[in-house]
Image (cartoon, rainbow, N blue to C red; front, side):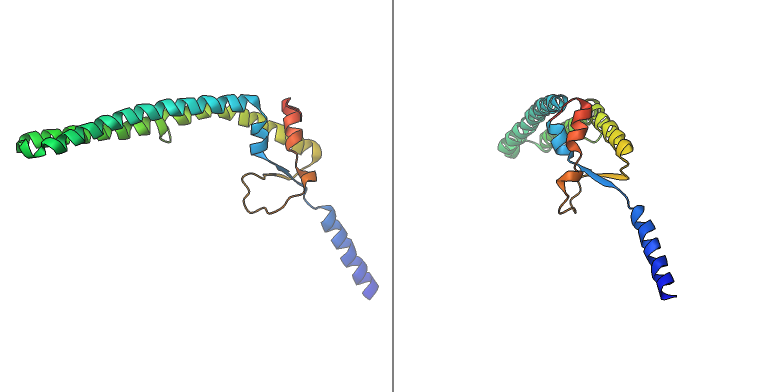
Length: 171
């Protein structure tokens, strides 16, 4: 009876272990660093960001100049003139805030440009990962770059180079 129970437990353990899930890891940062189109898109985004930042800084300087001029002359201005100058300063500061939102807001020009340039590359990487997962029977592929709670993962289950190879950027 004891042997039958032991044999039954061993069979169940064998069945459960045979259904173990297969995992793989990728390093998205590593993959993106090795895709020239991504580097080009990043350079274009950085250049655009600098241009937008310069435009915002110019408007900001205008607001600062108005404020400094107001401070110098505040004592000699009438109440109506002070109010007018204060409104001009506030209006200029609002322009700066609107410009910042227009360029860098969640739906701003930078976000749209990033979506246009980076998303197609990310989609190709995703399709390559999906293809490898189907071919090798992986149940899950985890991005090592964004998985902060992973302390160690064996390099033998890292499929980053396979992804690059499928995309035509073999290492």
